Image (cartoon, rainbow, N blue to C red; front, side, top):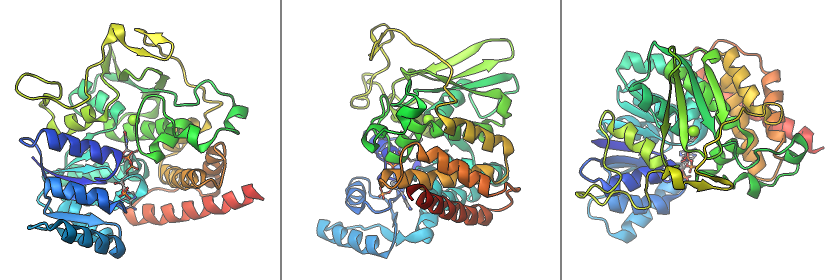
Length: 405
Ligand code: NDP
Ligand code: MG
């Protein structure tokens, strides 16, 4: 299968390239993109020989061209940059499948480009679904673009349902690890550090989603993501804290059966399934292939994490302490531009927190302030979503200056 990876230098992108490395018979890379990490992109180009690559801007393009010259590559890829480059990588590289794995709203334009082109879209970039799912899902349907989830919870549900919809579903239960601050109080959260927020107990991921997991905004965004992907009402979407992260989500049917999907805390399973569905590739060694390095199924009786040995636990989330979860669910229920504003304000607030400009508890505060300042309206175009993203980020930043006074 011919694959374009948007965000190839990120955590999801690198996991996908690892799959391509170990399953060259299944995956051929046609395009790769990065933001600024051109050294890592150059290494991937050397290994996977895409026809087209795209980087952030002219400076990164010049730096990458220099690296490729030093490497003495005989056949060089076309090197593009900016929005045009991302769109070309998404829609014009000859790929059949596009893995959308840029972080944040920066992924919106190329993700829409892939959908518009009618390509199969393996979507990790949840922010695009949150910001503009009302536009993306119908566009994909019109263009004949199949959308498959990569996010582990949504992949779990997709694996259980065998598709995106099933009329007999009663509820979806998204599991959440609870993040590094599970069990802390509101007061405790005022004092946590950047380092502590980036220390996720179960998953290794990029900094933005790791921070979102610590505030639990990530699970809030995932509720909205599930609403769009599976076409269910918010009353049918729930969250349970499951610190072991063995069960990746649960589908409850109308007859009371609850089907769960379990697996390693390794995104390569969900990425591979999004690419291979309805088949499953032999990620575990099967005699003919060596399988993926450092990849094993969960050994249930011997499974151990913290105080839990061979035990899986489930509990209700602490909505009062982790306010971001309720804010996101509320924005989802309001609909229209409310999730666009929430997602953009959160992106800005997380960047401010990771830059040391605001405290951890300020993230939810800033998101709430921005949501209150911008009235929700119907969402009618991608341009509107992008303008609103700029406006929400600007407002969040200005509110953060008041916090510091
Ligand atoms: P990372 O931060 O690890 O990687 C982000 C990627 O996006 C990098 O390739 C980065 O390029 C690129 N990028 C960032 N900004 C821009 C920009 N302005 N223009 C072009 N490219 C840009 O993120 P993750 O891999 O962790 O996450 C990617 C997406 O997948 C997110 O939406 C996240 O929510 C989702 N996801 C991730 C999971 C995980 O396990 N990591 C699990 C479930 C979902 P560079 O570094 O070169 O600047
Ligand atoms: Mg997830």
